[in-house]
Image (tube, rainbow, N blue to C red; front, side, top):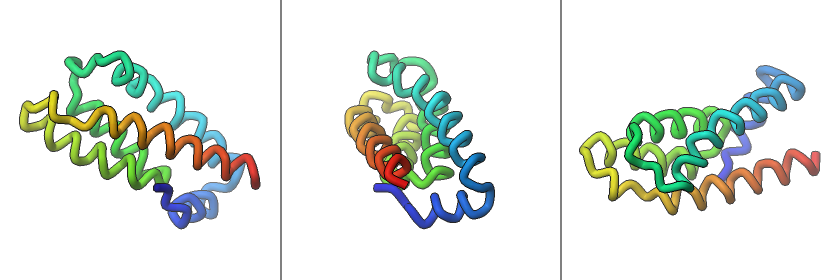
Length: 107
């Protein structure tokens, strides 16, 4: 679910303190979109939302979420918003966030 090698690479590159800031910014930015999805507000620009989530997720090592959002982006680009796996994306986000924050807290 989480690409821990990517997280370690990021931490090595920017340091622990900056990584913590990046995580905080990531969560703030991503949760705005996640909240829209939870409310069922997929009529906005779903393709753009999927693109933002995909990029943010992959940058931080949330590979499972990034993969789902990549698929969702393609589906939305075809105009099939109803076929975007929003429920799966929300579950992957919640599970990834819990795993990620749990591991960070234990370090």
